Length: 238
Ligand code: C5P
Image (tube, rainbow, N blue to C red; front, side, top):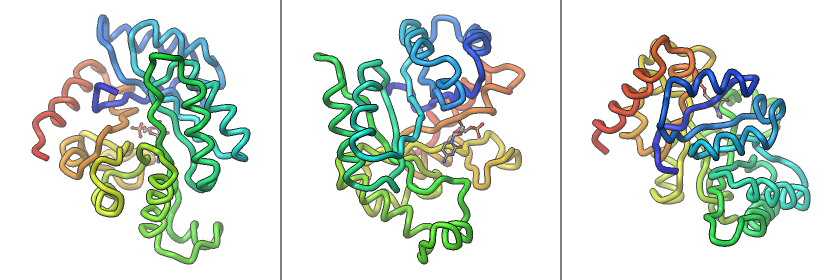
């Protein structure tokens, strides 16, 4: 994907998306379609955004038996999206199957979508992970473990907090893609995110892409918010 800033289109309907995109005339953006939008508007939403020239991260976080994930990824690749994801907890067999499905479904002459893994959701606390998932390890170790499994399975990267990027890069290499939500212009305004970083911090920590939702979609001047976020990223020294 070309832009380091992926805008999370956390909207319920195509209509809301169209109103938002009016603020960005003639601009090719990188956008994220999540479950809410995909389950309400379906593949037609992907087609509309593609036709308008935008790059798409389809954030459906697949987690099922390998055969189902392979078949589903084949379908998603045929839609022509640029990035997809799975839960690493689905296991190496499932992740390998996801990659096979993507390769099978990518139209000839097109690029295979980037496939990244969710390690532990950033909404999961260490206490919850230990009590409910019965994983008796520190959360950070689990994140690195899942990143290693994703790499072994041939995936391109992980979704994680920017604060986790240095330890992931150290464990699996700097060329492993890291996609980082929890970005705020001012770290004081957190909404429901637990750990947030600014765009320049995210870049210095080594993020490949940042995912930004409300700081752009709920801003009074959305275009200006996007431009400022990109400026902070561009100016940050790596
Ligand atoms: O509005 P905000 O910038 O917090 O939105 C972040 C986006 O990234 C949302 O679409 C959210 O679902 C997504 N996300 C996240 N944390 C993860 C994975 C995805 O916040 N671990």
